[in-house]
Length: 99
Image (cartoon, rainbow, N blue to C red; front, top):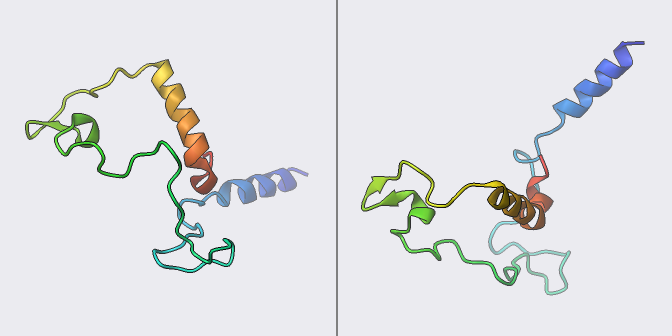
């Protein structure tokens, strides 16, 4: 009887590799899913393009005046972590999963 729960647990825990094997489209790929036939989508409103922060911004690269910062340049508290969780759930979890 103990074999069934062990086999079920092994199957469930062994199949979690959604970051390694996920479907994706490359730039310029077509798509039958969207009516316009393109896999490229407009970014969501109120998002910033990669690189929108200045190259010397410590939040963007962790450096100030060419040296690595010894601390995070924002206060890390419960409110910041919750905001990050909400943003991840809204914009990342669909592709990368909740785990």
